[in-house]
Image (cartoon, rainbow, N blue to C red; front, side):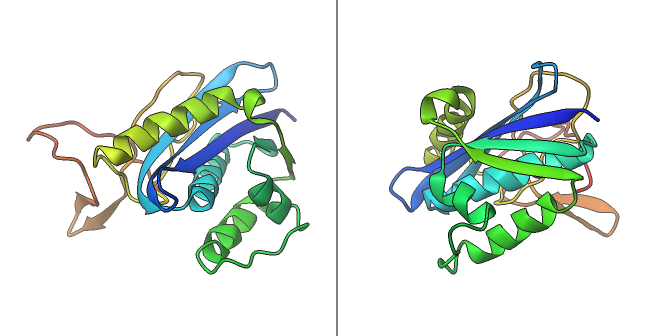
Length: 187
């Protein structure tokens, strides 16, 4: 069974402030499978880290990956997910619970702390997302990641939405012109 590696990073400018996450999914052969980024409204760096982890785990679930290794440079998030640190922050508890639930869906789940210099691409994507957040181009927190289509290099924006009366209503969508095409995936 193939193991996928998820590199994840998140950050905030102002802590709390405009935030973002970045994630890169690599297959067992070392080939990049997908990349994710999300611009977030006012969040802390720890919230952004968890939201990146959640987005990455949702994308892995959609592949569907069965064995997952997560690598992140957030010692707090990694140690909390390993059960070595308690989750004391009320803002992090629901994010931690969602991440643990998602992690439990895989046959094998490991998470390890790595130095920032080994997490360069996820860090770069998180910084791009923070630039977008600072410019006011935010996506809804916890927005759905891609379904994990076969190897592709993309950096899309993900916007949460709901179906109402048979139509999709986007939440916190940027001002796109009439007729803009979007791809919808079920979360």
